[in-house]
Image (cartoon, rainbow over all chains, first blue to last red; front, side, top):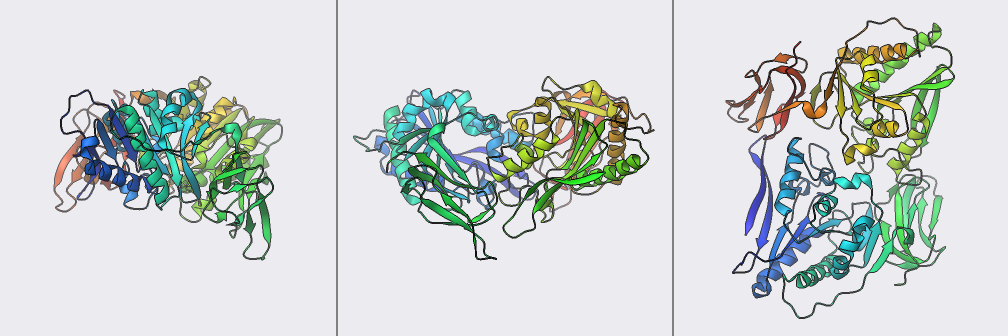
Length: 312
Length: 311
C-alpha cells in the first residue's frame, strides 16, 4: 500500500511528496518484524531504484512468503531525483547532512524529522546509495567502527563484495544512517556502482542479500538463498590514492581488478602538451574496489581505493 | 601592505586558483580576516576589498600598532565565483565544510588545509560569512558555543547583536569552529546581503572590524563607539512560519520593531493574485531574520524575532 509520508506545498501548483510502499502479509497480528529500505537521498544515485523495483516485484509475485512488514521508500529526495540534482534543489543542501532533522528549523529539516519519525520502530533499515558521478564503487556495506559489533552480523548477509569498517567522522553524524543507528534502529549503509547510472549486476546481488536478511529476521520464508562471503576491511587495510597533478585521468585497468603493487592504474594526461602529467601505480597488491570514472581531476581528486592484500 | 599567494592549485585548463593574502604590519599574529569562501559571497568579497583599502591607508599613516600583524584573505573560492557557482566548481563540495582540512585528502580538503595552515595562530579570527537559508539578517556577530567563545569580546565590534549558536555536527567542519578549537577567538560577521552588494551594511561591517582592531590595540583609529550589543542565544529566537506556499510579499524588514498581531508578510495565490494567508507576529520584538525570496514553500521559517526587545 502506497502511503504519503511527507507532503509540503511548493510555491506554484505543486506538492513535494515523499512516499513509501508498505508490503505486509495478508493477515497481520501486530507482532511482525519490520524492515525498512530507503534510497534516493542523493538525487544522482539511482541504483536503489532498480533494487526497490525488484524487491517489491518479487514480494508481490510471492506474497505467501511474506511474514513481516517491508517498508520501501524509493525517493527521499524526489525533487533531486527528478531534476538530476544530487542535493535538494533550491537549497543546494546535501540531504544526508540534515538528519535527524528538527521541528525548530527550516522546512528541509522538518522533512528529515518526519522521515525519521516514520522509520522509527523498524527492526532494521537498509540505506542504499550509489557512488557519485566521479567514482565507481564495488557493492559494499560501510559501517563505522562504533557500530561494528551490532551491524556486522547483518552486513555479512547482504551478499556484498565488501564490508568496509571505517572510523567515525563527526560530520557524518548528520547522516540518516548514523541518526537511525543512534536511535536504536540498526541501519546498514550500502554503496555501489556509479552516479547517474544503474549497475544491474550489483542491484541483483543486493536484492538477493536483502531477501537473505529478511529470512534471518523472520520477515521472508524461503529455503535457501545463496550469498557470498564479503571481504571485511578496516581502515588500515584500505589504501587510498589521490591525484597529485591536475589533468585528464585515463584508466589502464578495470574496476574490481586485482592488481599487484607497482602496476599502473592509469595516467593523468595533458591534452594540450601531449604529455603524461602523472603515472598512477598501485601502492600495494589488492582489489581496486573504488576507481575514478570521471576523467577531469585536480590535485587531491580521489583516483582509487584498494583493499590491500586481498585476492580476487 | 604585502600581497602574497597563500595557496595555489593548478587546473587542467583554467588559470591556477590563487588564494591571495594581504599582510599589514609586522610582528605577533594579531588578527586574520577571511572573506568569500563560497562562490556567491560577493558582499563578503566586497567588504574585504574595502577593508584592505582602509588598512592600506592606515598603514601609510603609521596607524598599525608595532608588533601586530594583520592578514586579510578576501576570497578563497573565486574559482566558483567566476563561473556563477556557489560551491567548488568540479564536485560541488563546500570549502567551509572542510576545515581543518587534510593535505592528503580530496581537493577541497587540501584547499581548506592550505588556507587553515596560514590562518592559524592569530589571536583573533574574523570571517564574513553567509547563511544557507535565503533571507536577510540584521547585521550581527555570530559565534559558536564551543566553550572557548567570548561574547564580551564579540561586543567590541559595536554591532547591534551578538548571536551564540550551539554547534551541530554539521558546524564542526566550518572555519569558525576550527579556529576556536585551535585557540583563536573566532567571530563570524553577517551583513544584510550575500549575492549582491549592499553598501550600507558593507560600510557597517568595515567599521565594525576597524573598531574591534582599535579596541584590541592592533590599530590606531578613531571611530564611533557603535552599539552595546544585545547578546542572543540562537535557540531563544521566536520562529515564525508561513501556512501556505505561494508568492511571498514581505512587509516587515529585519531591524524593525513589531508588536504581537502585526502582519509581517502576505502569501498570494500565484495564479489569481489573491492574498491567501498572512504571516502574523506571535510576539512583540525586533525582527532578526526575514525570508526574502519572492516565492515560498509551505511551512518555511520566514521570520525570526528577538522576543520582547524594543528599539
